[in-house]
Amino acid sequence: MTCLLLGPVENLLFELKNFRPQILHKVLVLSLFPLFLVGLIFFQLYQLVSRAEAMAVAERRQTEIVERINSITMLFANAGGSIASYSVTGNAAYMTAGKEFVDKLRSEFDALDKLVVTDKEQREVISEFRKVVESEVTQLTSIGAPEAGMTYEQAVLNMRGLRSMVKQAGIKSRIMMRVNMQQKARLAEMRTQEAASRTRVKEVAFWGFIATILLAIVAVWAFILNITGRLALLVENARMLPRGMPLTESVGGSDELAYLDSVLHEASDELKRAAEHREQLMEMVAHDLRSPLMSSQISLEILTSDRLPEPPPAAKKHIVGVKHNIALLVGLVNDLLTVDKLEAGKLELAPEDFNVSKVVQEASETVTGLANRKQIEVVNACSPATAHADKARVMQVIINYLSNAIKFSPKNSRITISDQVDPESPHMLCISVQDQGPGIEEGQRKRLFERFYQAKSGQESKGFGLGLAICKLIVESHGGRVGVESEVGKGSIFWFTIPAADEQDDDDY
Image 1 (cartoon, rainbow, N blue to C red):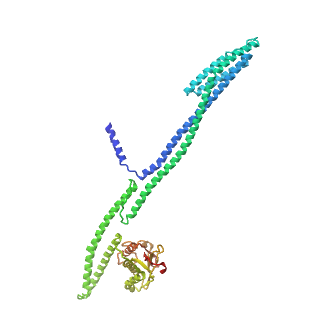
Image 2: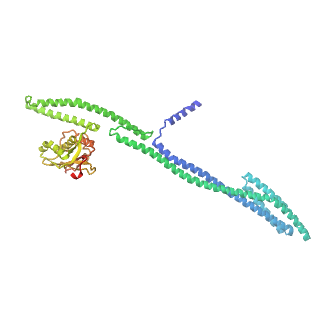
Image 3: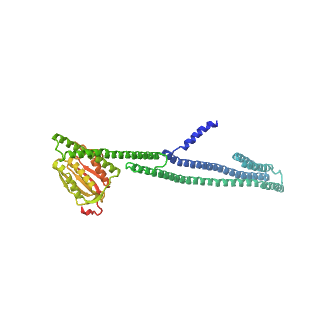
């Protein structure tokens, strides 16, 4: 039998040892603990109220006992007076009245016996009290009427005998007084206890209410601190995860928050491994793909150079096509490597102070050939403001913006480049490129700066959708922002922000 019982007990102990409280369990404890405390207080109040009710009943009974004892005392005195009058005057009416008082006295004793039937001590006292009274009543009722023809002197002598009897009865009636005083004292004690009980009920109700409120506040405060602190750490880890930053701290506990945090840490580890694989892939691309392409490009340059005889026209046409395709592949590889370095934060920037207008002019001259093919006028409306950034990378962004604007603008249109102080950040410069193209739908504007995304414009795309993504990463690496404002049929404005030079004065532009 002992072995049979050990199995369930061991299983229970094992389950308790491995029990991990969840948020639901904490909420249940938080909810049930005040309820348990309130129930305990109500139970205590119920006991106190029940006791107070019992004491009130006992007080009413004791009051009735005292009243009946007083009534017995008065009835006994009245009966003695009536019988004494009868012994002197011989008037039968006095004896009749005395016997009626005695009957009422005995009825009071009968009622008194019923009141003390459950109290042994009081029952014994009342029994003794009744014996004394019955003894006195028997003596009183044994007094006869004066004999006929009794002279006045004989009546006086008879009164002296009655006085002696009454005197003896008075001595015995001290027992009655003692009983009466005892019952009154007991009644006073009950009243005191009842008052104390009522006070106790009030105190328990008041302090119980205060304790419940305080404990509820403490419990809620502890729960909120536990949940909000760990939740804040969980949110911080969730924010660090997409940035590729290491999750150094863990959410303690065994509830759902701890489980979510463990999932985030596992995801972080997976992202680290994926980043390592991507880095290996980029190294492979840089070494095993770009190097052969560059070699092929150099070989084609040699074939079309003046140092070798000019190839036949058909062969030259194919060589030019291959050169163009290899140039596109080299550009793609370079863009992929640039994106990877920017996302990994490994692209080194060389910030310097430069004149924005001059850099914009250089970028405009770079795309002059593309603009002339479509008779597009490129207007440099930038002020001589000074920026502090990587000049070459900023020029790369401007050239990309201009190239896209030229590609999607109609012939004989205008492209305007301008700058201003960023309204949201006075220490930043905002450079914008405005074209007169077809505009961009709102659904496409949200994805323009994503990798490999190409807007649907009806024109055949010759790129890979990395140009604007690279621009975004370059600008963000300077602490700036990128954006586009466009309306279908009214052209587009592509803009980005870069830091202004420290000595730059807002009044200069």
